[in-house]
Length: 176
Image (tube, rainbow, N blue to C red; front, side):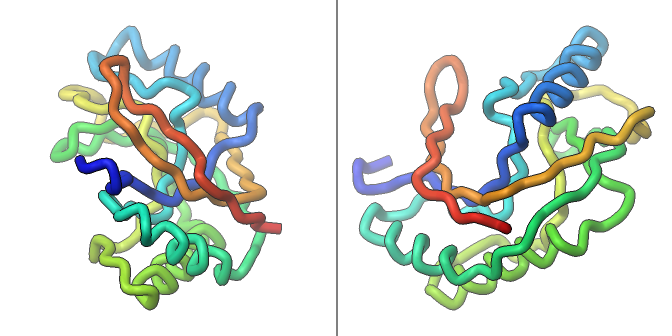
């Protein structure tokens, strides 16, 4: 990737208590499931993935994001799923989160209006716990729901390193 290209996405980061719950869950699942487990500091929910973006277009991203209607985001994650084709283990919710879906729709609409090309598949709220997972039950209900609350969303840069991806928040916008 050339120096003027940045691998970017918009995401929600968990509050510290939620991050700790997620780390505990990962630690319980890890011994029985061979996979590449995501480090706790990298756990997030992607709202919109942009891929490689020229440095000069980052201001346009920030401008589009600043137009998103701020609304509090609170929802529950209550099941673990193994998605075979991308080989990931993720947390999802049995019930759609209208507020989270609306946030993602609002953001992607504003990004498209600003001329950014995004994936056409519909938004499905999920948190990836592990990659390259080849075997796991298709779905497991959690005994206790994990409640996710976000007070902001962020524009994040991803850089690859030998020890894994490093995520750097470039800007953030309040949700309340």
